[in-house]
Length: 363
Image 1 (cartoon, rainbow, N blue to C red):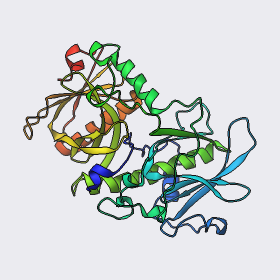
Image 2: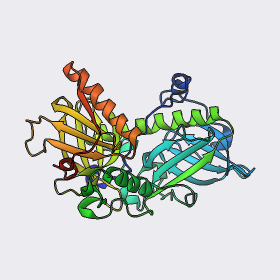
Image 3: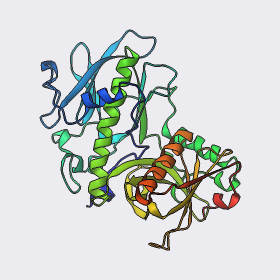
Image 4: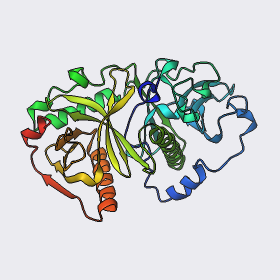
């Protein structure tokens, strides 16, 4: 089975966005994948031989609790460790992390990991560990490691509610978007069994920032290996991927992974409700972009206009609904930056008040 059709992944904003903290460059050097740190002896029985110790810290169970646990980060996984017994409680593979958040939180000590819950060992390929096709993940040493032994905190919105909100925001100026939902009108991300999140309270803002940088950097490297081995041919280089809704020609909003390299933008299908990554629906050279349009009334919508002579089946106008203004700006800025490098020209970005209904129909 080919990896492109078997790997389960939660495509996201490049999990790579590094904190604006003034020490972020130093932290990147410290927590980068190129440096080897000695593993504390107390963790030697927990960390498999094919993983490398990165860092660990003490976390509070919640804001009002004095109960603590140890968060342990390796080159492949995040582990929750019991502070008293030093036994593993659960772990999450970096490859399953949808986003690492915290710098937007009003609480400077909050760290949030949104992740994809794997339902079956067969969904995990060996690529991240060097394999080129589907197979068992060597991180598990032959056994399946459940990465969702605890429920998300009740006050934590899941990806389902976030993307549902993005559809509502996007539909405020175009009735054709109000139907929401994923591929074929199937309701989008409709199963909380596949997405969860965990909130951690660090002992200080500095520790929170260290974990933001280290997790984002490591997950970026993980996704870069995957996408460059699966979809992006050399010499192009992975830049980011974003989880979004694409409005098709019938006005239906379909879950997609928008993948950006140094040369092309890819529209990749997502299977629902499992959120397994699918196949490339189409792609276009970033140099073929004509304009980008954004809208004050729908700040999470981005409309691309193409001059794509390479593939006439790709419609001239493409509409994407992002989670929020931040993700829209991230995708917009990346496309403009790469376009400038490729063409030595500036890509026009038009900001309008209202979203025209013709865009809502997914032309």
